[in-house]
Length: 174
Image 1: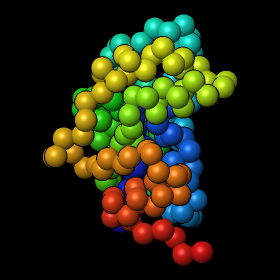
Image 2: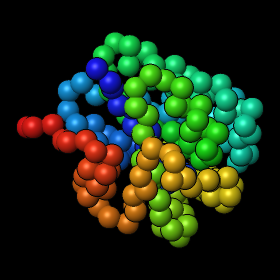
Image 3: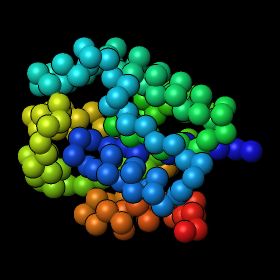
């Protein structure tokens, strides 16, 4: 059996965690969820908290840990959803080394909407000041990448439903 691994991606403030949780609820048993931020080493968190963008060298070990988690879950018979900015194609390629199908759900919105969401967010280590660097780093999905782009201007339920349908999955029967 082939398992599916969904990476909910995008810049800070796009709603990765909320959408991933909503997708998990809709997809049901057999799916596991991981918050990509939980795989960051403390040094990365402190760097971002201080307003310093991460470098590729900072990101490689983090991406490898996410890929290892996904591969381990695949080997135990689970499909997964993981949140990860996955801003550049090379990062997405690093995440694709796992068995099964890795598909990207890119949550995309205007800079104004993203900035307003970041400004309203409390208790997160990522300051709004890093949004411009994330937008500058972002490489949109290319036609040969397995993934979809979803506009974040809709409500959470609509976004999750669109993401599930557009990656070719069906919600679990409740």
